[in-house]
Image 1 (cartoon, rainbow, N blue to C red):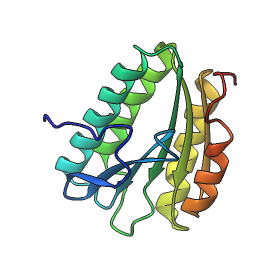
Image 2: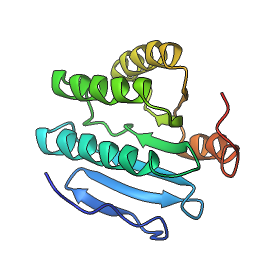
Image 3: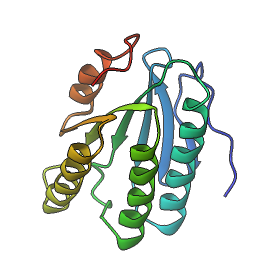
Length: 154
């Protein structure tokens, strides 16, 4: 799957595929994904976008990616394919030098508890990642804002 990611200066959300949008918040300091489906097309596009962003981050001196992942939509579920693709992203993050700060926005559902369980396991195993879970998008953005313009420290 090939597509062009929005530029850091592009403020409005862009639909990468139906069910997946990406936008830059806080003047390009935070990249935000919103998933409203866990279909094959959405999962593959989400995976590819994350890989492209990691490629870009590895070439920059900032050494820090600040990301928001909104999976709070009622149609989101932790499918085997999504879980496998998230595992692939996690493996790359653990092996890389880039530091990650990630806010995951979830609803209060049993699926969200499963996501947060796996996310917490990942966060503890990845020295270069700090990840928190929120039920409010604004709370997640506020938490991430503390990292904008800072050096990559855990």
